[in-house]
Image (tube, rainbow, N blue to C red; front, side):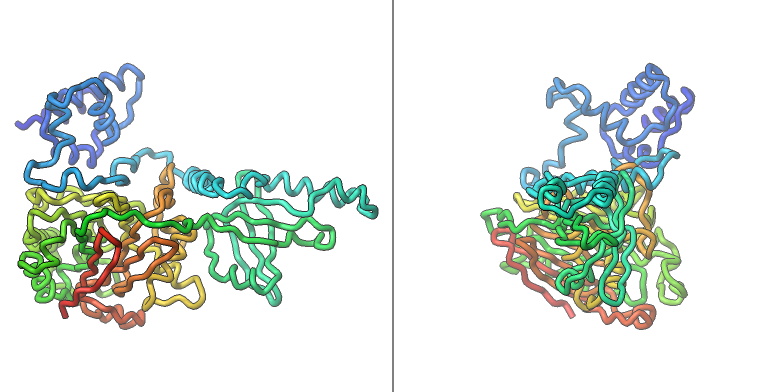
Length: 503
């Protein structure tokens, strides 16, 4: 019996369950797992906690003794990479939701949206106007006070402010004949506000439900029937100069392989893999490969999918995908996140693909969650599969699947990867909103829509890396004409990009 099984039995005998993700994590460790589990059980007994053993419990034990030396095998075996990984000092995983996703039964969306509100308010606090933000309850009290007072003379009028700032989430949006009405919500209540000018009405057209805003609204008695918006301030990313690595090295950005589908472009993808192993001048400078989800086509994802599959066994799809990806040269480090077609949790955020026996031997792979942030030669790259682009494109006038960069700009402007709740994109009720874009990325990489496009927004390079699947009948019904078989390459030295077409 192996040490992990012994540790599991020990925990069960002591009355503790081990979360499946924690069990998978234990199996990946090369250290004294029995000691780790005994330490966790002792701590839980001490504080009389009968909660399941989670990945965070394991990681806390590993990092609890800050005085451990790097010679201690408990530390070195977990934090070190294989010696063959020559890029060890050049990349970091800055954020991976896998180990932050909890398994408690008391989840609710109140905590999720409260976290969204507070995180985005922190982003807005950089703006000077944020110092004037008032809670909605205070604003209503101000309005009631102004209505009950006489404002006929200038001295009396001077006691009241003409406008105030508020920050909140958009609960509803209604286009009317001559204006647009929004209902804004914060922790103290909700309030109706109205856009009346042509410019503000146009700006309101790109707003999506559940996103966070800061607004300047009028308290003038002339507009006593409505709170009229004077200005809309987005969390947005600032104008900035993106980091550059200073050396010419490349990252290859791809997504949406859909292995297992009859429409998977196997020949073209093998051509891409062969090219990665060639002596091409550019290839020699490729240090990283980022794969933004939908590794396999999955099963039961959309109506009549079974008619478009080569293999109805998800494990066989994964096994074949692994046999292809292992052809990527070992000198290149690969970052892989899941998509909505891959097995496991469908709701955002998604944990890393676990229990992938066929991927375990791939030493140059980091299998992480969706979304994740990695740092490559000092370049901060945000990886997101892109499920929420469906909702943004369907909601905002003028957007289409043929121009995914414009939809991705709205996510950056909102500082949130999936602001709309209740449409096609499932969002899990985590106690923390891990979809808020807290740090400004140098590169924003997504897939999902199967359209290859590159653009820039306020210094951030935006890449949608298309797909390796020809148009399916389902896509025909959706009016999506993909641009597959293309790899996007980015020079980390200057953030210039170009396409390599394998059609």
